[in-house]
Length: 131
Length: 111
Length: 99
Image 1 (cartoon, one colour):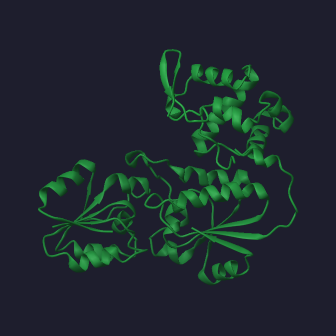
Image 2 (tube, helix red, strand yellow):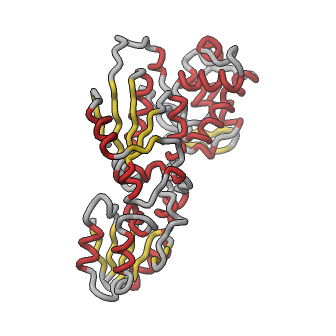
Image 3 (tube, rainbow over the protein chains, first blue to last red):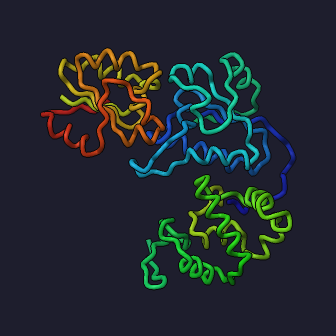
């Protein structure tokens, strides 16, 4: 919860931000850090896309149970993104295929994109932030 | 980290007074935190605190004020889902105060 | 020898290096992000299954569960808990971690 939300909308300039997630959860801190940055960025009313490619698609797996490794299960937090008005979630088709995953395996609704469309989406961003 | 004795139970808090272990929360802890924050708990306060706890259980984060306001409006009605109402209950910010009383960790993005 | 791999096979070459060096009868334990290689549909699954002919392949259960993979483990891969991890280390005279 951020009290900085009380600030005005700022200059009103809206840029296209892409947050690119390429790491599996838990083995490194990238996935959790990336998610937290997105939640903070949401306060600035920008045009945010979240993209999951390579091992990043593992972040969205259903049925995660982290009790055994004693870390927070932040997979539930992806379901809060809608409430933060972050609704553009994209997943790379080839990355899903290479891991035997389908949309049904994921905890949130996503748009699955073929590589050429993903490439175009990346090319049209003002800012890409990679985790 | 500092330990405080609340109703005969040792409870760990961080340097800003937030509960370290969510599972140690109970009503006594909430009341203690409320006194620390100079908030007098009414049914309306408990409603927000319980809402925050439910939100945390579902999403594993404390919501941003804007998100909390919207979510409360959806669940408890527009007369409660607005900044004025929430700041009247928690004058120093629903983010800081209600989360602390609810035993949640310091909110993400709270700078 | 016990070989321990903790990096995802779809991100790094640690598993491949390990399987190239592991001699017949050795044990390979997958932990952390590496456990994903031992799940059905993963690009590394065929390599794991081929290796299982000559090697004993293990995966750490709590790490599988933490990645939503508890129900997708390949046949021929043995799931162990932390106690099993300790037993594997104790049973083998030496150990190599492919960091």
